Length: 611
Ligand code: G6P
Image (tube, rainbow, N blue to C red):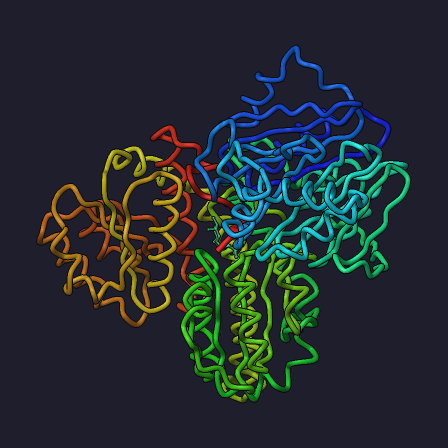
């Protein structure tokens, strides 16, 4: 979702801003803009991609060593040149870029209109720029005070950068609910909504907290709250390598990330297993482990792919640890009146650690006194900072909007948690525990094998790239995998797809099946194998096309299905980690063959920081 980048220092700001905006493209956006502050303030903005902005500014004056840039994902007002950021206040004293949503914008707008303000755009950001200016002119206060006072009147979320015409030697950044990182260079500072635009210049960073306002000059940084309480900045070292946010020879980030899964899972194991691989340590849960072991109920919350990982977690934890688990969409959980007991354990799953609905659901759970744990990928993001304890997935930066390696890393953590709890609760014997760990450690190699045979999947993709609907079916552990497979296809190829529990097919989706309907069935050898074979027969009897993911060596389904994709044999509970990989590849190849923008699908955002 919207991206922010800012620079103040001695070098030219423009290349930093443009490169930064390119790094932020993955978040999802529909227009882009920059402001260069150099005597006057020059604003260039347009609908479309960062490359359109580059074309637009060609031969224009972009000189100056202070500036800000923005990629906008439309909330208030359609994507167009006027609504793109930056926004200037009516009398030109302030320029603002903003992520988030000002919820009371309508009331603020009416008040400002009564005081003679008119608005060019339909954005809430322009209202904020004018509110700051109104306070600045009326109160005859400094730009910083005007920003802080204005923010006390705002209800909603923001990550923003403001520049004041009369105080050109500084940028003011503020955060509430929408992340901002300040990178520290030599007599220069970088500001961004995540670390990706900063990492090539410095690895010294400060993550702003909610209600922080940073007053940034090229050689001085002051952080206060909006209520003027001085804050002591906590400087952290980024553990991020520039290579990790580049494509490394792959055509797309998504493909790179699919192929990175063996390594991502190994990195997720790293340091969390005893040397002889017979025990699991999840250091981040150490303090809460006794409560977790005794938990009467676990509630898992998340959105999108993270919610699917949560569903796999439910099956794992109930099977191995015998603790009842509920899985909820964070967006539903937060708005209904969920019953949360003090001794419930809530697990929030999020790749980005910034999803607005998940954050709000966590806050709700915390109000009820429950312990909240996080499973997140982005180090230092909001969810790990808000939760009582948690585990990082260590999948490395995920740039493709469609989540792949984050999913398998989340499932890996949930598998480890389920095993550990199972052992501690004496559901699993030492022998079973040891065997499962041994089996889990084989997963990266098995995924590598699946990836080796990607040509077969590519050929299947070529056959069905023009289909208009797909159905994905699975039972037990593979029902969430079916949901995830369907989501991947929808997200990047814009083909309608539905994931369904295979046994439910006869209660509805079977009516859709004809010779034009490819049905992807996860049909590995497990306890419901016979049943899934029957489901395949039901599809074939109605002339449906079956693409089956099977255990290698399977001959029964090979004779029934139109296509098979083989995966190595595995314990059923660990097989979601394997079966999802061909589905990721199938969506990827179909989307590429349909000419879709795989890494930045239309309308989607990587990190959804609005409700
Ligand atoms: C967006 C992304 C999805 C992701 C979901 C939840 O919709 O496009 O890939 O699964 O948000 O994000 P989170 O960062 O909380 O896992």
